[in-house]
Image (tube, rainbow, N blue to C red; front, side):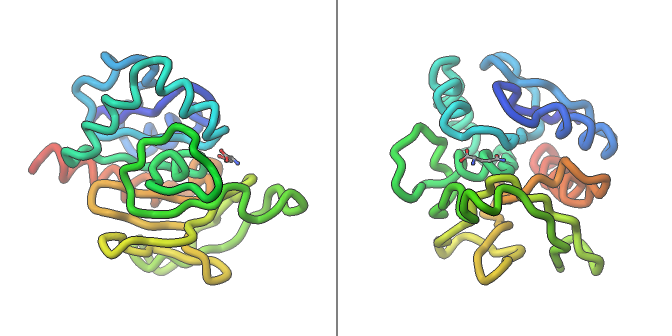
Length: 193
Ligand code: GLN
C-alpha cells in the first residue's frame, strides 16, 4: 500500500521512516501526479504558512481538497493540523479547510517552544504515547462531526473526522508508531471500501 507524505517543507522524511516501519511504501508528494494511486496522505509539521503557499503555487491545494472531500484519508500533524482546519485563529493563510475544527497556532507561547508528554489515547491502546510538541497548535473548537481522541490541559490535541486525522504533536519523532498504524488502518479501509 502506497501512502504519500507531502514533501514541500518540514519533517517529511521522519514520516516516511514511520510508514516504512508500518510496512508501507512512502511516496514523497511534490506534484499533483504524485497523488495518483495513493491510499492516503500525511501532511507533516513545519511552517503552515510556507506549506500552504507552496500547495497553492504547485497546484496541489485544490487537488488534495477534492480528494479529501471524497473520503481519501489525510493525516495532518502539527502544521498539517493547521492546514486541515476550516478556521485558524487570527489568520487567513491558505489551507485545505477540510476539517471542522478551529486551530490556534503557536498555542503554547514562545517561552514553551517545545515539550513532551505521555499522552493517553484510549483509541489506540492502554499505554500512553509519547507526544512531542514543537511550537504546536491546539484545537480550540470542534464541530459536531469531530471525534476527540485526546486532550491536554483541557485542549483538544488529537481528533478525527471520518477520513481526516489531526494531531497537534509530532508522532514521527518517537519510535512508537501506533498512531501511524492507526492511520494506515484508515487507509486500508479506504482502499478496500
Ligand atoms: N508553528 C508552526 C505553524 O504555525 C507549526 C509548528 C510545527 O509544525 N512543528 O505552522
